[in-house]
Length: 599
Image 1 (cartoon, rainbow, N blue to C red):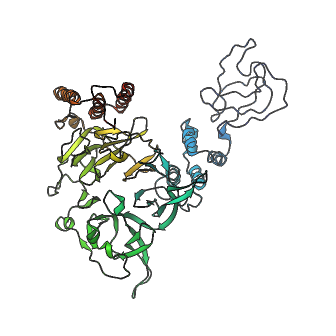
Image 2 (tube, one colour):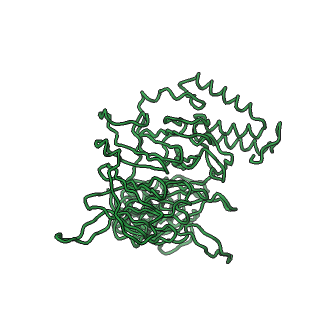
Image 3 (cartoon, rainbow, N blue to C red):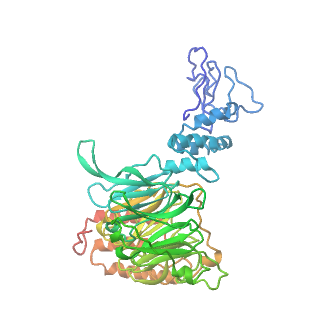
């Protein structure tokens, strides 16, 4: 299909001076005409007898010949693609790769309608996922299902070892896209859009050279079906993630006095090392939950369950006794935030070892709504680290709060923040993640390319390309997949989940004009075009910091950090960073004093 339909040959005669037999390339379309016979004359290919090229206007193969145009001598009648049965055209197009189908649909109106037909995407979906029985949900179920399965992938990059490149895990054939993932102590768990939870195992495999090597996420099994959500120990170190808690729906047999079975929500606990189920608790059929998070220590583990109505229930289990074969009753209680404020509807939760963050429905008319965090707009997503947090509001602005000892807030300094502080040079992130003492942001450029930014402690390779860390968000040396949508970092590895859902549209709003010229927080990175005095003071501070560095290499590193603090475009920052790297390599460490080993 990429080279167009073949022409039908007639009796072959002597070659013409133009070298053609009646087949010409359509001007401006890249398609080829389909002719019905004859060897062309000297003028057929738009070339004169003396070799001069003449422009010949061609017709689009999808639209047929020009109205009122006369057929030239020796040329056959062009056949329009529209004359073929639609089912045949859809069948041919369905064999193209998904990327080519999307590109073909952008050539003209006819191909846009054909390539956007559900029949084409149904065939593509069945080719990509033969075992997928249902098309799923949504306005365009088959197109959504095909693109979900075409873009799904789990990528990881190890921080140690010789190979520091991006690798891809095994892709379960039964998975219908990837919704979310969680790495544990030894393995990785992935939940798809049909509620199937997959168990991706690390294993010893034989390489092409016959060597036995340890490979990450190379085998998979189905752990359970009907899963809604899952969670494990909220600490950043995966060593503590011994058990996996799965919120699922199960059919319960009918009890005495009732007819038929009922679907009830339950929490199942699995050993992450083997996938064996060790505990199960079932709730009443009238209670329906949508999210689960954990908080607290192993011997006093609190499970927080969020209902569809926005209420939070909790129960406490002792993980140290889960491996003992016994049955006991747990107490399910309404959380204090839902008990004391019954009008408050929680939409999302996040937790760490000792804290829980709630995102509530925003109601400006509700004067009793508590605002524990002073924020100027509705919050859409959040990330909670060990002792700092990040928030993203409806306008795509990023706010950071908490401990800033290593510069993990990305504010350009190492001063703690007791209130949410906006990071002015970052906007509209795809994903935000907060860890032990560093933070990561997945962003998208104007050309739809993705890049990964990070700040904070760089020890152990957790900020690739920045071993000394950075107090501002800098571009990391990581190749980001085109459809990356979420990320997670552990002590040993960086993970990125790739999946594109056409039903998930960008939710950020444009900032009103009255707020664009707002007064930013005073600080090093607060200089804005509308505040020349603040920008000048910030530049003076930058120069004093560079002057205080003892070596040339330290001054280069400080200048790289300052470029990250400044409100520049992504392309401008990349330019300055690359230029500074070139100067640093050319200098070769020659400066007023000895350079540090990291430099």
